[in-house]
Image (cartoon, rainbow, N blue to C red):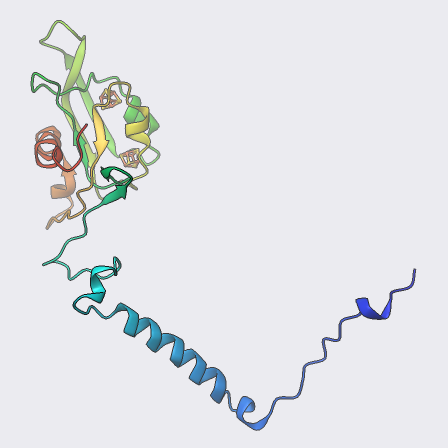
Length: 185
Ligand code: SF4
Ligand code: SF4
């Protein structure tokens, strides 16, 4: 088989001129790109209103919401968990262990107890999530059969010790109260 002349590519490196040999044009081009991005991202009155990437945190906080046609919807951002309450203010969880079974890092710990209510058999006596171990994958909320566990837009999670970052049932129910307006069920 013969290869035609037009299919042959000459890959011999071309000779560089003196400026190219010193990398001056490439360096200037690279600096130009850097300064262009710096300039574009410096917050300035008026223009920065369109610049969604710059927020003056902590004075300014990014709302994890998406503007969709016809309104604003909670975004798919996955932050700290909450345990949802039902219309009577009770924890929705029925202690089925589906979330802890689905969790790939085993950071959910549940202790079940017989429920004091007639509409379910069990409820969680203890429900802990290690927020530092969690990878915020959302598998727990996907697995939950009664929408009892959800990840919220809340992302400011701080603590001075590892123990503080293990959120118990009380804390997870408090987060429900704090985030229900930002992320309705
Ligand atoms: S978000 Fe993922 S890692 Fe975190 S508790 Fe849920 S299942 Fe586990
Ligand atoms: S949060 Fe949902 S999946 Fe997890 S134990 Fe409760 S009801 Fe089951």
